[in-house]
Length: 317
Image (tube, rainbow, N blue to C red; front, top):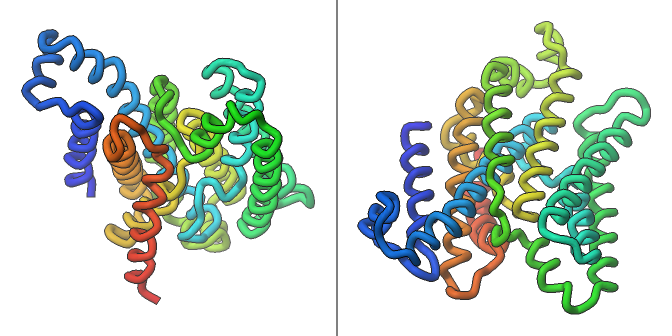
């Protein structure tokens, strides 16, 4: 599985660096990496495109792994990282910061706090009667997400017209200001290091909580860890890039249909495939109507809807 995903990841990163409103040849790119070449190419590649491409890859990997974990947690192959209202909470936080007229750093921080608040709210409501189960968690997340959607609609309705373009772009997913890639990369690597030794346990849990408990597994603790990791990854992805759909839904679903259900292989494969897909989608967003840039969430939706319908048609049963 990883043997062909690694070259795909390298190819997507290369295309992200070379293709855009100005196309750079491989020879010109090599000259830039040697410290020579056109200063314009140097600025485009190393100062503008490289941080954006690295951020896109990490965000795509986080969303794909979060999707795989949510589908495992909820025992539902069609679950999505945003199903628990994390995206809505992050969006409300970011939009409040935009309305306050603060800088990009404050917008990102507010988005993270909103996602964290939504995580605590959903988890607290789901446990209000003691224990929680996948169905209770799913229903609670849907209700909270609907509530955030109503708040977002209200904020857009009362916002000044000059603020609306930036707010709408953020809601559709936008990597234009995603210059900070250290946090999503650190989170991605940390999550993989945590989950890889637990691959066998995750495989058991995927067969059902009762079977896992009968084999001596601490099911509640494992499910809590999965939820918290998925929430953290989604919150950081939304903080960096806004609301980007279909990556967390499509990538793990496609990889399971192609390669099976072994979590030890599926999760690193999700990191590579999700990162590659978002980098390629962002490259299209920068190139299709250049010099105008489209929100990357539009591209992922346009690609994701037909691809997912095709995958569903191939799913047995």
